[in-house]
Image 1: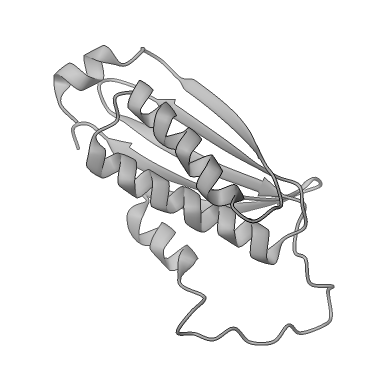
Image 2 (image 1 turned 90 degrees about the vertical axis):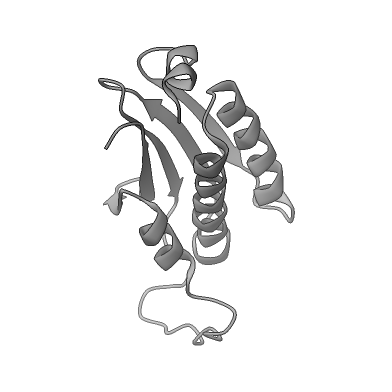
Length: 144
């Protein structure tokens, strides 16, 4: 991101929260909304694509593996000309009953989403709390 793009963006933090409908096509609908936010924030195209991929992976993980409802929080912080876009998806916790093993997914088609998130993010993690599970990732921009 160039200095001009950073200066054009609002200072401080910004946040958007999106409820995830547990329906087919939900991820693509949220991605369109996120893309519009990233354009409004003047996020560089390459970073925007990485953020959208992280959004897709975390939302798909929530739809496939967790109980609804899920919520996505997208925020941007910008301390000292450096900053990060943070993606956080909160769901109600694992969908599979505890104690029962789910069938192993086909490794050729599933199981790489969180590896992709880890590879793209500067930082990422999972937080289990009374309301469910939150998976988050931060993608940094600006001077290193």
